[in-house]
Length: 147
Image (cartoon, rainbow, N blue to C red; front, side, top):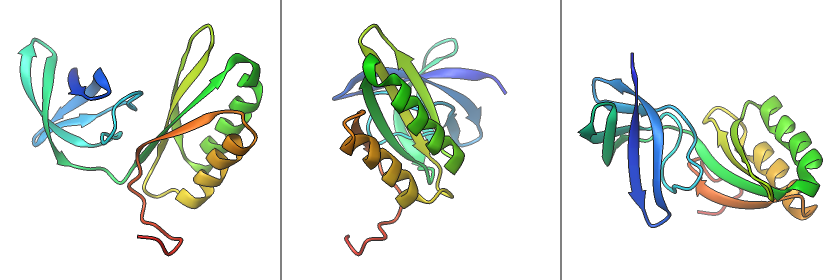
């Protein structure tokens, strides 16, 4: 199946994500860096703009994945890389964008991964002041008694 770009427009700005065409729409193939409410493996509807480029029009089915973003500056890159490796060992994935001043990382927590264990790693980096964390979309059930 061929990949296409699906363009999402939101309050966060415009972001184009790779997606694969399926019968019900398009499956998102990568992790959003800026969007909220969109995760890896979501099935979305989109309208053709140009060959291979579509505009998001709605979500057909949400995946069980959760998305967080972390940002760290260059001086914390070594520690952040170690913490990201801990997340990968749990079964999480990530995509990283580097710039002169630091890195922005989109972290995917699959539905089958222990979200509490993943959050402990994210929180550890936060408390150590290695990075800052932003929620993109947390879809894991709450296990601490809160609703």
